[in-house]
View (tube, rainbow, N blue to C red):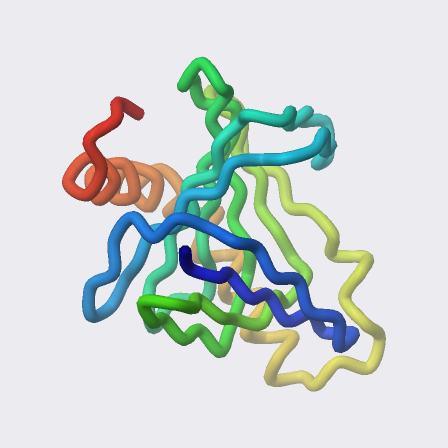
Length: 158
């Protein structure tokens, strides 16, 4: 087991027990089986659905690929992050609130901007904006890269 540890800007911390799929020098992949019903934006995630989570050192985002229990893609979900550390036992980062949702065949939707705290440091606000811009311009290529990494690292069909 490998823990995903998400630090939030408000000081809360979320910890998820995941399966380590791959860990290389600059990137890693975790697998998480969803345990309870959850709704994100207009996406319903059900128990048994799978999250493959992709992390890259030096990038301002991570990527969750949500698959149904039947292995079909539900959506792609980018978190804007910083402070990523990767190890065999723990993937840890700070979640910077802003997210980008990509439903197959649709344009990306930027989420949760209203949750960014007022008075946030200007340098952090600029970092978040640059991360959003990078994902919205390059999401298709990032998703393709993630799918290649998963095929290379994992035997099940995506």
